[in-house]
Image (cartoon, rainbow, N blue to C red):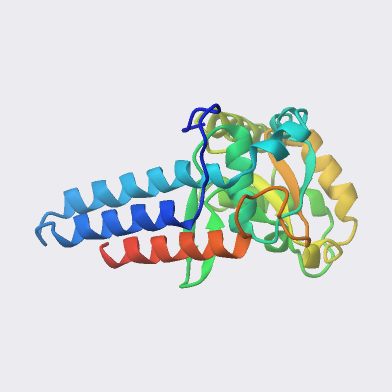
Length: 238
């Protein structure tokens, strides 16, 4: 997207390292009291990183399955053989032609800011209506507050409209299902089928356990480590 297709170009760790070093040098030289400038630089660098990592997605893989983006945009279920939450955010961002939206949780975990893990939707003891309870948990993540206790059709319509509005702004929420989560909620496939029917702007993606050699042009672990170190560096200045 950023480099003309006809030119010879190779994406590797040096690009992220160069951005890392340039940003850190700039922030270190900034007067300590200029908090607005610090925030502007941190946000700008994070946005540049979000575009830069899209170059790690193999163009040949995208061309092998031209219908993949259409299935993604229609919020269908898509299997993507990457091993991490960071990897799937990079791939989905590339398919949606938007910057990856990455965040650091703790000191190690790199996640997409609009990811909802299927593991977060575990319900514990059986509920009278699991689908409604899951929708309430999704409401809490998307609308940043507790869902109405009695979740009615008007509330579901509000959630669906919000997901549509955010998708149009480039904040597409999606559920990721790690291999270890696939069988932890009873009736998983049944619940996912109904979620995709009722919340059409909420994507669902399985993360595979195989190596992402066909998808990424560098080892996924290296990419994730570079992103983590970059975000740790930005955190030091906030």
